[in-house]
Length: 342
Ligand code: PEP
Ligand code: MN
Image (tube, rainbow, N blue to C red; front, side, top):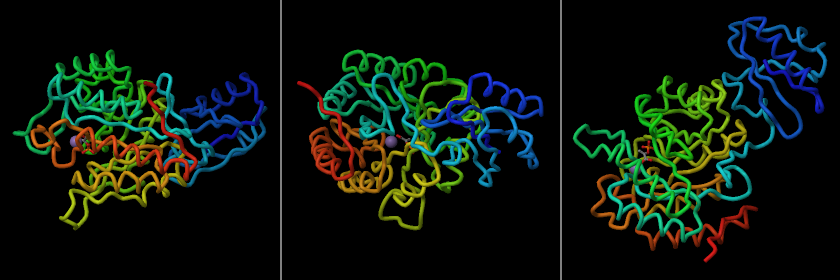
C-alpha cells in the first residue's frame, strides 16, 4: 500500500499518517517527490483497507501496490531520482562517468589512472580494495592499504571515490573513504549486507547479480530503501548466458525496462559486460544510447600487468577517446558530460 499525500500536505498530517501506520504494527517509509510525498507501508502480510487512510487529513489517495517492490517502483515516485553525491549527482541530466582500475594495486598505478580519469571530465574514481574474487588463490585486493591509497587519490584529485564493500566486517572502513559504496554482483543477494548499507545514508552502487533477473535486482534495491537509504544507483554489468565468446552478456534491455519500472538511476558497466577491452567503447556508447545515466569503465596504465581484469581494462589514452565519443553522443540524448577546466 502507498499513501499518496496531497501536494501541500502539512508536516503534521504526514506525521499522523505515519503514526497510524505504526499503530497498525507496520512500517512507514516517507518517499519525497517533486510534486508530493508518498508514504510506503511495509510489514503487512495481507491487504490493508485503503479506507483507513483515505479519509485522513492531507491524504490524496491510498493505492494498493501489486508489484513485490514498493519503494523502488514508479508508483512510489513517478519522477526520476537524482542521487546527490557532494557537489555532483547521478540520475540528472549530466551523465556519470566512473572510471579507474578494477583493483587498487599501488600508488603509482592509482594516481596515474586517477589523473587520466580527472582529465577526461569524469567525476568518479573507482577501484576495489576488497575484491570478491571467484578463485580463493587470485589477488584479493590491498584491503585497508588500498583504502588509504584511495583516500589519498581523492585528496589529490578531488574525484569522488567508488569502492566495493565485500562484507559487513569491513563495511565501516569502506564507508569512511567511499563517496559511493559498491555492492558487487556476487553480493547482490546478500541480504545482511544490503540491510547494513541500508542503515547508512552513503549512496550505494548496486550491481546486478551474475544470473539475477531484473526483478531480483529491484528487490535487492528494495532491501536498501526499506532500511531508509534512498540513495541507490543500479548497475547493469552483464549476465551469464550460453555465449562463451564474451565474458558476460551486457543486457541493455534492462536499461529501458528498469527506467519504466523504477525511479532509481541506472548505469552500465561495459567492462564486465563484455570482458574484452576492444569492445568496451562500443558497449559504453550503446549503454548511453539505451538511456543509462552513466557508465563505469575499468582503466589501467598497463592492462597486461593488471592483477585483476586486465583483459577488459582500457589504457588511459583509449579511455580518453571513449569519453570524447560519449561527449559527442550526449547532446543527441539531451544529456551533458562534465568538462574538466584546465
Ligand atoms: C568490479 O566492479 O570490479 C567487480 C568485481 O564487478 P562485479 O561485481 O560486477 O563482478
Ligand atoms: Mn573488475
